[in-house]
Amino acid sequence: MWHHLKPLALCAATLTLAAGCAHTTGKAPEAAPVTPAEPAPAVKEAPAAPSVNINNGTVTEVIQAGRYSYVNVDSGSAKTWFAVPTADLKVGQQVEVKPGMPVTNYLAKSLNRTFDTIYFSDELVIKEVVKPATPAKKLPSWHSPLTPTAKTTGSVSVSGKVLEVINGGDYSYARVDQGETDIWVAVPAGDKVEQGQVVKFLSGSLVKNFGSAALNRNFDKVIFSGGVDKQGK
Image (cartoon, rainbow, N blue to C red; front, top):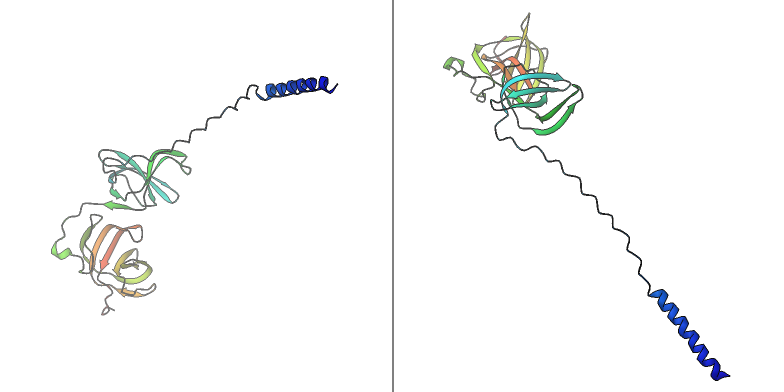
């Protein structure tokens, strides 16, 4: 009987092995589809540097808004918008703007206006043609040469009560009472001038439309004096 069962057991084992092979050698499952990676967002390029000098020209439009003056400057080959710290500017003035940072599609909320391209600068200088000074109109020896930002007139002397003092770099600027009006006088920073003093200043040159970079301010008129007249009363 053992001899009859052994072939049967062998057949059963063979059939089981064949079934297992058929199961494990079937068609392999398909790989999951690969989702393509999203392209990286395009980097917005900064506007190309202008091929002409746009920083010098004539003011064609001025808009005052908050702490900025928006100025359109015509360089002769292009008209360009600049945003500078608030300044007293007028159409027709010749100006030079310090190179600044360009911004495209800038929305000025205070104006409800979008500028295609505007340059933010921290300095603007008003320029005027300077006539050669005659010997009688020379600035004091301590004064640095004037740039084409202002023009001078003859020698002027001032005395009066000091209403205000502003220290700015190499100079101290004193606003002096002249009765019905007042005038600014610039003296070397080493000369001590205090509010409330009655002072007589040495004769100096009257400079009109002077722009002080140290103070970021324009003076309609300022007298550059050699200092306080210590002999004056």
